[in-house]
Length: 515
Image 1 (cartoon, one colour):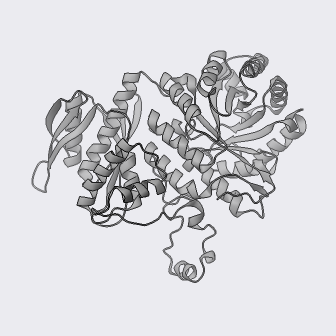
Image 2: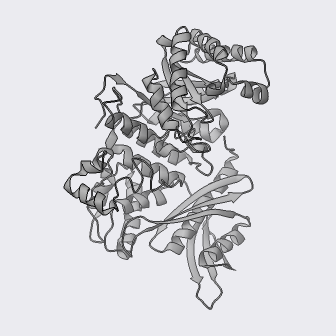
Image 3: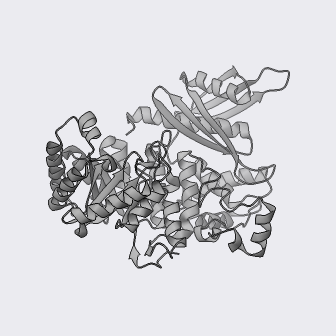
């Protein structure tokens, strides 16, 4: 289902894998990046900014494999205005059906003076040379004057004219620090169209941050003033307060056709699933009151509202949940369900698994079905995301026993299986059974890992529901998110801690650093 109703197309540029992954603690591993990219293609975004290739070998490899495997969207790599970055970006995206290089350089006085410490005209020359250099590889070049909303407009006019002449085909205007308000941001886009020669020959893009809570409003106002590409992220994740939320922009354009005469090629029925996938893999929960995809977006507690909804949904709902795929098929599975039924449910959830991976998930399904009477699609989805990390973890849970009570000292015995097949066991006490188990794991690994945040959610309803635990862990200067599921919340808690620990050990082993 697409939203092709209006007269002009708006291109959706998804930066979840680049700017979105810069959310503290939201690091995705290689396999998770590919899974998100595949889902973004199913969602129907026009451009995927797959990453910042020069930042690490692992990042470059992930972007390269996304470019090779993911068909449909333009695959874009980010680069600073230096040859080494551009070389890395091109090496990463060159095998894409439609590759793009995205070059950026600071344009505001505060960036040029304090961060870059260079003369504005020298930086303009650097920008022009960078665009020309990128033009050796591809004709699809996007240029971003970083912190454009705080830049001097006369300088911006001159800079953009120069990079357009040098070969830029998309000009992106970033509100890097979320400083703009809609009226002034829209007016800025209008003035750029009027005062920059050649601006009518390129696509105008906008990239808005949400520091003042106006990223979506600013993006939509820019569209009214001539922008035709919007850079946005699933669930609005991103640096600091996040970026413009893709789902909010797309649904606003769709629902308010009387105000916005534009369309997107988005597959709206994949919005909800994409939101859930990104939330689970990044460990960043969707706020319950989040527009479009929040748990309460279609919930009603007021008696007056409930009465109206029962009589006619339109009394209090302007969005149909089915538009965004919010009502998954509720065929529940049981211990008597065979492989075919589980495979059918996985297909409906759009998971592309190998025969070996299907067998792995079926094994975990049987274990879960023995513990609870009915297994729902959300349970199946959680099993896939929990168990198919596609990489061999350094430590696996082999045995867990905890002791707690009103008059006993909480303690835990934890035995972990190591990568080489050996096992190691420790006993520890703590403030509670979960804390004791975490202390035992720290003793096994010899690492002093801090627990910054702990969240427990039920995947489905009922006393036998699968519990999902997400933890934010810190070690030295790193923040890592872990997740785990089980019908036993203590076991789920330990699994989530191990999931984060294995990510941490893998990062340290690869020698990668955050962007």
